[in-house]
Image (cartoon, rainbow, N blue to C red; front, side, top):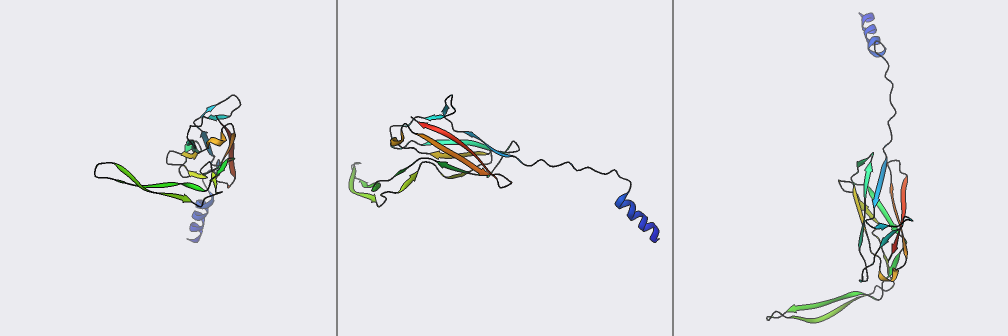
Length: 173
């Protein structure tokens, strides 16, 4: 009986089947396709027309993929070459009330102070891709930057903990 059991065990472990060759698994490829939603010139520079307001808000977009499938919850980091400084006031608050006749009356103005010299970045520093792989951030250059070329760096870590980055340029008109 021992011989039969040993023979069966030997056949199950080593016999009768062809050997299976294992195929190497391709590593996952994570990438982000940028779409700054701006016109681009022949040199590859994007152009943003600044508004008449102090700040111009603009959304930069892109799509994150893993092996060409939209990737949810990828952290994307953003950096800008430009920033500006606040003056001594951030703004003001006007306290108003409405009279019985429907007229607004301003009773007090309070200034928000104590921010002199604080640095204000022109880009949000991080964002995450949504379930469709879409990733967005906002830039907000100011009027004093007209004529400048803003350098934007977008970067993220792939699944091998390598930094993948892309740099592009926006001319502020």
